[in-house]
Image 1 (cartoon, rainbow, N blue to C red):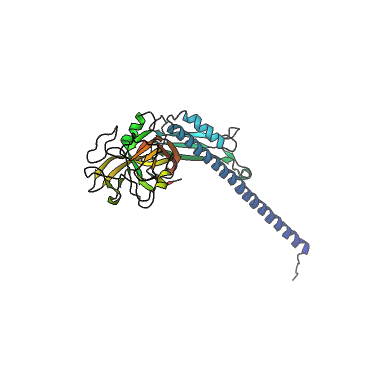
Image 2 (image 1 turned 135 degrees about the vertical axis):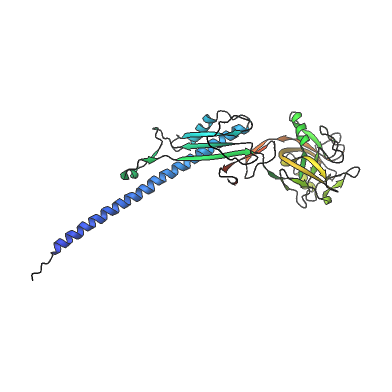
Length: 356
């Protein structure tokens, strides 16, 4: 039998050919990874800029609506969407919503807004470049026959009165706020009593004025709207004919802390009714206001400034005026609008829970 030996040269050539195939496959894999990293990175960056634009567009329209006029919502949204895009170009596919005090384009799809909101806005943005392309064009992805992709983003923003505030333990009647509005915005004197100008006589229960909450050893209280705030019997001083009303600050509000309220803006609950609960009163909270205290008078020593005896003959008065406030806050919406409005982004799938 004859044995034929393969030459070493032939074996080397075959090995070299196999190596070339492996190298080519590695190059293809590297190019694929580069396409994935670079092109996906470009899509993610586009998504970020479009989301920023949608957020900014929705918020700008919201702030216009809060001011009393939603204005040209399409033009406003386009301005903010473009300014947040990396190339200063973006499509605004939809800007719509609902507002109590303004006209908003209706949305094409149903949106569940947070309960208690005074209005909400939806903004949808998508890819647009300076050349008019509506896709992010792939680089390495074209090697595999892929041209590009359109990216989009959506933002939901709502606004309304907050459902809670934290501030000094002071509550005020709705009729006092209405009296201030009628005054043209000037300072008013609000008494801690039953006979208050501009408010109906409450008989055995107060219908106007202000009162102190029981906050114990601290001089702050958190109050929830649509709640009934009770005043502990220990914090109530009887006032006339056995009627009960908190005519003195709680133990946590000493003269130093009360004097520190001078000329300060404080968040206070507004109530519209009270009931006798056997030795103490409960007040129904219907919203919150921002009040600048320019004067206060109490019978305790060292707590009297800028309220004259003629203005406050009973010795328990606040003086000041209401102001407006618009802020972002992680609260729900509830109650009447007394000048404090909050806004927040929300998740359309879970408008009451997952918000930022």
